[in-house]
Image (cartoon, rainbow, N blue to C red; front, side, top):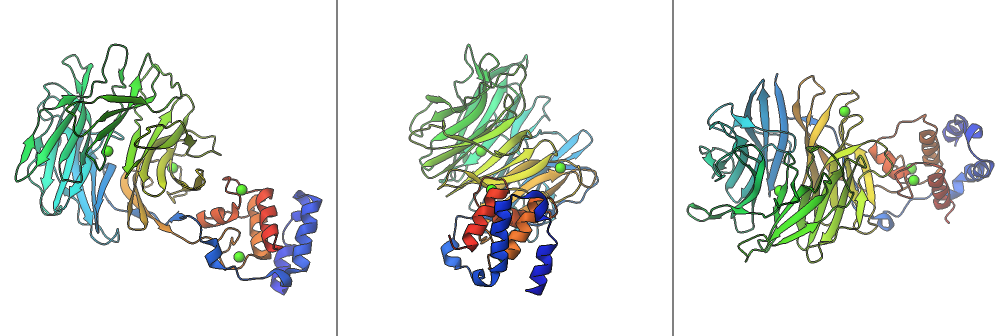
Length: 485
Ligand SMILES: [Ca+2]
Ligand SMILES: [Ca+2]
Ligand SMILES: [Ca+2]
Ligand SMILES: [Ca+2]
């Protein structure tokens, strides 16, 4: 009691908080011995709470390493990114066979050096099927940018020479590439005419048997008289279990640049369905180079996109049957900063990472499937500098989340990652000693008074009503728990 009493007296409660609260607080304090109790952990088994841990630097270089992308298959993480040395870019590969404990020595994938073309959101793509690993990227060795593919047939140990996989004559860019559950390959890209204007968007299907059969590319049918995709925004392609292809892109209809979805059913030879999936009336006289993303899990589909009008990023979720995204959610509801470049992962819940542009920091949050609210929002990068973190992606392996990004805390950009571990966090047990008691009230009061800087776990345990704020309402809920109400 003595130590606790001294700690209590050191708080400056009387200065700031209401009398009624102080009475309750003193009541709790003076009767503390009655209220100490062990929380029954089983009654607090809540939804998943992922906490991102220490940041791990993967690359060490004196140039720039950017645009990470990965594919995970069982116990292997296949990682690719772009190494930038002045005007020369090359595609690099490394893998982890031990859940991110270590990564193999980085190796260059492209056999012809220094012609890679890459931008934010538009770096290499990685796909994996059994022993085969595929990496695609854009490259201007021919004088015009085109799409190339490198294949490894031994889980990424060795790489065959790259092959050209776009089949249109002039500049091709903004490619995305997927492998479906049967091991067949799907490519989407933007095709520009000789005058560099967007001519059409192309989809190409490759059947993989003993050899790869190259079908000719087909049109998505989304470059039409009065609208076309933003011509410098990355689209995202995903394939569902039936082999249906979904492409999300930022549209341009008289400078209103909302997200649209084009769908090709597996049995059809053409794209035939089109949906407007965001409606923020995103009016802009320029293409903002921030494209939407989508992910599919069984019969559910999720999307993410940025509205420059709102200076905010959103996620939406729907069944594949309905494709109705009118119920969308702000990624970071309590922040006034510009949230951008969202990237999502959908399984039982919907996980997102994005860039908060004020500090160029990587943030994580999860849409809770039951409450439909964003929870567990936390900053992933753990530097205390003003340096830039960007290009975040998120994936899941088993019960662990992985986020990778590019980070210039050392003066040049290097590839970093962090694991998000699923932690049991008892709401109200701020110091995680399995008791909810006066000590937890002391910490939460000090957080509110700005006298204590909480870590991600303490923030989540303190926010009892899950509104992304820590304030008097949370203290009242905490006191109610302690009083057994
Ligand atoms: Ca994709
Ligand atoms: Ca930063
Ligand atoms: Ca506690
Ligand atoms: Ca709260």
